[in-house]
Length: 400
Image: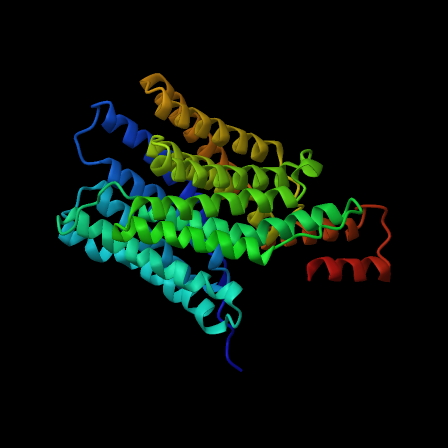
């Protein structure tokens, strides 16, 4: 017989690492902006690290579920190496392999299986989306080497927003339908394929415009399609019926920010709104809220705990949401006070997210605790002193 290779999920490493890095990255950028650190953490680096650093770590934790321990370690170390290469100011040419290592591994582990197994167009979109992060990384590295002009186009952020649009459009209605079913309500409109197709097509058009320099009105039209799609779908999920369930309401709030962020991005080209307002609604609002909520929710599911959010998780979402509001306000009314307040709320929210994740008991450890409790019940003088066959069967069942 061959020994079975132990498997684990990457979320146990990648989720806390993502939250802690997000808590560090924003104060670093603010310190550089305030002149407390030497130049280096530029707006382009800040955008890159919040998307291809923080967000992509969350994506990896979500998608890489049954891997060998050495593969999880390789994923984490490749992600960490990319972050350290930038933090330590490694020359752009030397940092290249470190920057590409994690997106390449993520595509090999999570993207290629989508391409191989997805027979329907609905799921086939995820493989190319994950692979496109390699293109976003290449564009960033080329701009760092001076080969292309960055042009202020947040390709990585728009890729993340597209992934949230598609993946959130599957996960959120499923969670919503389950919560409504427990109330005796059937959710008729779940995935809504036509609206989903409209949103993904619009996001793709916006991405193409951003990456290639197509006329901005085309990109704006695509962003408007993506935003309208998100908001129409959200309205059909009956979010008003689940306001008292923070584990679901937080997902709805994040998707609301996603729709609003796409529309603000469209308004930048069509109505001369500040572009940064849309970017930060997408990054700070949609990404921040959905990432924190999904990290906590999937951790609870995978460790077989009740999905009901603990109070700290609800506080986390509130802190991140407040950070997003303050950051967008700072775009409209520039102020170092607003920026600092937004950074404080964001950092506290991410630290609290990490604390919630790190204090969840693992499934294996909880099984051992249950077994020990059952054994104590069966010891002489333990429990009611009855060690009959029924209790022995209960002990065996709990130990499985």
